[in-house]
Length: 172
Image (cartoon, rainbow, N blue to C red; front, side, top):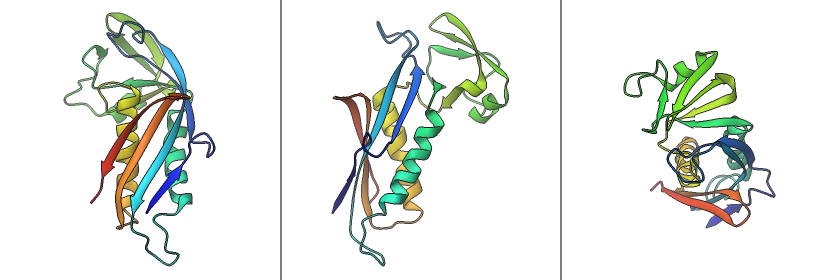
């Protein structure tokens, strides 16, 4: 059986700024009002014969949305982004959060941004495609801690109505 959660109606939303280094039009800082749709398939199980409790799915997904909301999304593993005093191969993303200000060169342009205004993501890009993969993998891992009946988690990260990317994470 499959469950569906509509991101707009369930308030699974976030508004963030980002940049796609090297892209003709998206290579400038810009933002979107994202919403996240969720699809999960699995066998019905447990005391109430649920595939998964909607409350759990919404809680975990909303938590991810809240972490990204009103922040600048920085894809740490993008080759066109140079973060001052940060070695992508040896340093932890968590160290960046400790800095007061982060100094970046993105495709040759210099920026200094308070680290509290940023979310540093272990991604090569902050495209809808990469964000949907990030959400699906994170949610699948979290739900797998409590549910052993799930087949897959599919996430659509929408940059606006009618424009999104879907990633499916198979669990079984």
